[in-house]
Each structure stands twice: as structure tokens, then as C-alpha cells.
Image (cartoon, rainbow, N blue to C red; front, side):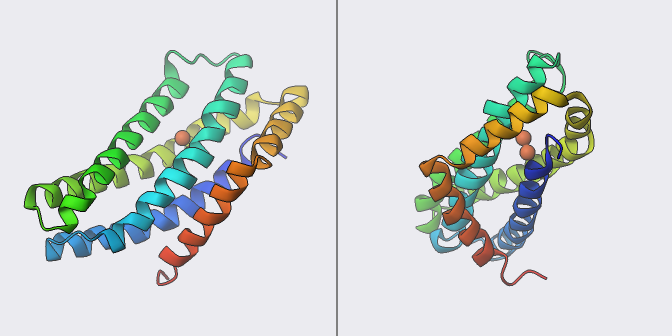
Length: 183
Ligand SMILES: [Fe+2]
Ligand SMILES: [Fe+2]
């Protein structure tokens, strides 16, 4: 057992959905057409799975645990990760706000959804690379013994909350649907 196993597995789900999102963005860019039918499920997944479930676990459980183990929150890796979560939320919020107008053919809204979409894609891929390659390795070394047992219990507690169970199951089904056609 280590401190980040489940989070690394969740990254793989998110990365597969990001590959499908990249294809959807490419098609939308070529056609200059953004539809709710295509984009809404991605945004639902990013909000529910990537943010509420996954980033929630990082922000509410892993990062405070790392902080108790001596890693600062007001600068360094945790600070950067929190800032990137915030930027990701802003991209998703902007896409949601513009989606109906983009679907109706408003050129500025189409442009905005595409810009925020590609921005979000780059941000989240880089973010996951930093967590998998740097922060999570530090976490696996730093969190040991009682701290590790307590973190594992914390994760289990989050994962049993009814809202988490519902959102996780719904968003995993969306992910399966979105990645069905991916190799
Ligand atoms: Fe993160
Ligand atoms: Fe993450």
C-alpha cells in the first residue's frame, strides 16, 4: 500500500477521457461547430470525476496529510497543484457558461469553448504528469506508518460517502461511453 495508488489509477481514467476530449476538440475546430451533445458529457465528467471526486480527495485528504508530514502549503508543489486545480475549474466553468451560445452558433462562444478546451487539456495533462512524476513520489516516501494508515482510512471514508459513490459511478459510466471508440 502507498499513499497515492488510487489517485494514480484515477489519473489513468482522466487521461483516457482527455484523449477523447482532444479528438472532440479537433473535430469541433475543423467544423467550427461546438455542440452540447458532444461537450456536455465531457464537462460533466471533468466536474464530477476529475474535480469533485479526484481533486477533492487530493485537496481534502492527501495535501493536508502531506502538510502534517512537513510539506508546506503556501509555496512549493502543493501550492502549485492547488493553483492548477483552480485554473482547471475556471476553464471548465467558462466552457459551461459558453456552451449553449456556442451550440446556437455564436462564433465568439465557439472560439471561447475551443480556447478554454485546449487550455484545459494542456493544463490537466501537465498537472497529472507533475503529480505522477514528482509530488506523488515524494508523498509515497514521506507518508509512512501511522500517517499512511490514517490516510488510507480517510480515503475509504470519502469513498463511502453517498454523494461520492453516486458521482463516481455516474462519471465512470460517462468515461466508459466517451472512450468506447478510443483504441
Ligand atoms: Fe491534482
Ligand atoms: Fe491528480
